[in-house]
Image 1 (cartoon, helix red, strand yellow):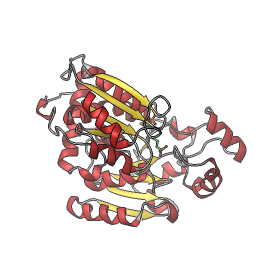
Image 2 (cartoon, helix red, strand yellow):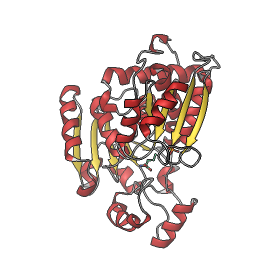
Image 3 (spheres, helix red, strand yellow):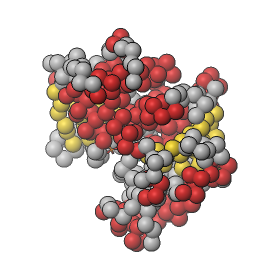
Image 4 (cartoon, helix red, strand yellow):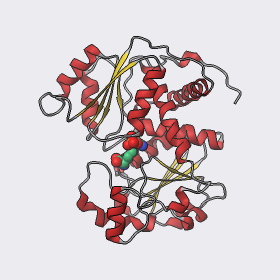
Length: 337
Ligand code: CP
Ligand code: NVA
């Protein structure tokens, strides 16, 4: 790749929180993606970028993680920083100490704080009381760092974001559906939520995204008919049908409602030639996981939201997408600290 360095983007959002994409302009998002591409180039070519030696960040995870935690840790190490990982078992957070007090303590020790947990209001509260940047590592409502990785991956694959028809299949009213809809609206893409009506994003958020779309040339469509939704799709995206923190009891209803929206060969064939499959991961594409095996065997399925055939096909770019979590998270840290 012929890459033009653009180091001015280091620190271009100094002091800003990264809580949801609604807070960011399309130009800022584009600049974050450019910075991520630059940092990826440096990492791949062994070019040092440890601009933040002597700085430290805290990572709070009230829900489990593989990609997000590892990405924040490696990104911080590459930038020359120290890292502390905190979970709800091994710290006072939530049980013995409020979010407001935790924010003030951590902000006096660290230069930035990542938070993964439940309601969006918690990370917003943390940011309110923290004098250092706070980054949202996933809440029930939004997962903004994931969307930067998804968009970097789409840019790498298709060359640009504008005009891409992006179809999200499954539970479109949770963190992934919500954030992807906002991201697509901001970047001038054609977003379609393909699901039964009760799984569409909230009317308020749809209205907000349609307003953004008027400025950017994006479209936001809610469509239960698979054939209509998938026609000419460039990207088919899905996520688990039951998210972290949701009760086990909802599985049966979700399977009944969302199984018709499984991403399988038939769905891929309805999209445009050259369409790609994406997933934030982890994915239930076979029965080689504890939950996949239990649910699959109990209800008689060999895969849940995506078939193994699609997941393992050349159209699947999920591992490139997962790698890009690290490069994009690094861009968020390096631009806001
Ligand atoms: N996609 C994602 O956020 O993965 P983790 O839950 O492993 O962090
Ligand atoms: N919707 C999923 C996303 C995981 C990255 C969850 O919240 O569990």
